[in-house]
Image (cartoon, rainbow, N blue to C red; front, side, top):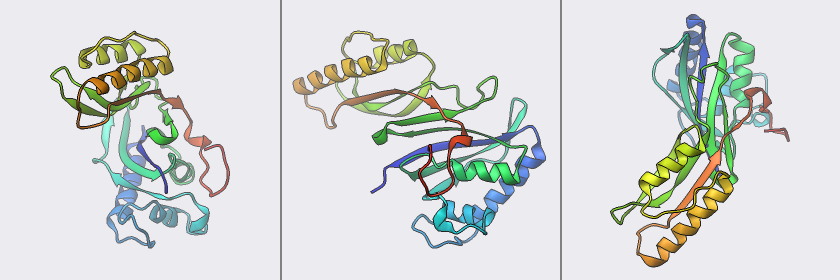
Length: 232
């Protein structure tokens, strides 16, 4: 059974016409009846593979996943962009999108952020000078106790640029003190130890846990589109 990886992918360019052309084509595929038999329905990546690379047998392309289309084309800074949101098997399957851009939309570039907790995959890419799309450096997920005696899930929080920001966030939420650690593994172990002690002393409806990780930068060009062993 696959572990499912969640990705937000931005396609952007200074050329508005190129982005709108790409958005219209992606939307046309998304809103059409699925062309490939699949269990995902609309947005199956195989439909995009078939549309752009009909000469390649679908079984040879890494396309086990689906996307949702984001909003219309928007303007951010000097760029025009649109988003897709992907759920893919085991890892980010950026290779298909990279090859589409490389062959058909040469003025478009890709930024993305992706996480798959079970396999410890936390990756991103944003080469804009201002990090317009994904300035995030760290990731937190978990179920934490609150100061009113309850527990609450925190889902996929990316908005941390420094360890100090993480510590401040945890200080504001947690009902106990813990030793501040600069190393993420040490910090995770410290907080989890306190959570385990907290669980032993009180009844919570859910299991308490925390996961803290740093995103690694992996270029879209490093992903393999084909069903073979590659770097990503």
